[in-house]
Amino acid sequence: MAIAMSTHMMALDVVPKVKIHLRNGQVIEGIITSRNEQQVEVETLNGMNYTFAMSDIDHISHETRKKNYDTAKFRGFIDLGYSMGMGQPRNNFWLIETSFGYAITPRAYLGAGIGIHNFNPVLKSYPQRTDKAQPEENDPNWRYPFIPIYAEGRYSFKNESSNTPFVSLKVGATFINHKGFYTSPTIGYHFKSNQFFSFNVGVGYALHTAHYKLWCTGDTPGAIPDKSGSSYLDKNAIFHNLLLKAGVEF
Image 1 (tube, rainbow, N blue to C red):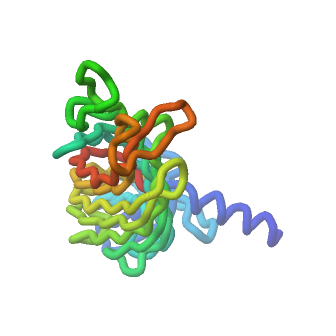
Image 2: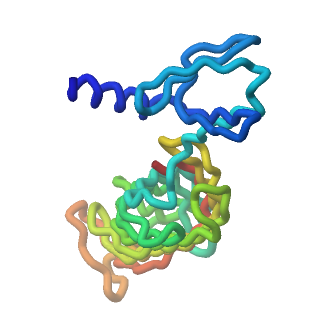
């Protein structure tokens, strides 16, 4: 009997609940098991069944099953986006970014994540290589994507159970494939959805530091011999990008 009652309560918990507001002032809470133009049958949380005539009902209010952002602690974010380079030299890239952590308050979040930034150099923005008879743009040849690992702080201007603007800041570094500092502030908007996930859109700025090879003649001061037989200068650069992104929160 106890197992049956527990199973019954679990089943009720996942069914949308209603409140029947009667004209005499009573309020009955439960789930609707049958309904037509003349009457409504309701099963309460303790298993009692009632039938009410429509003429005796003032109104019926339905429980909303939105995600309870005011009490839920865990947060997860997955964003997709595109970034446009600025300055000299520059790169454009597609991005995938994740973040997982906890809501310290209903508005403040702190977590960590990892991203994939698939760099595509804008060749005309790079200095020309000097080891060719004819001038030619230097290709940094980003064979592998940048993979930043970062901490993220986020603040929403309202509780996330509502539509709300937000700001976020990622700070970290790239350790895989390329090495360098990474940071990215974002401003955006959170759209509430259902109890499983919500949508976010944002615009932001990204900064990467990294180095690339500028190919040059072997007698150039500071030139480093390469195993291919050519020489290069190890150039350090700061890459600035504007980005647009959209994603889901769960």
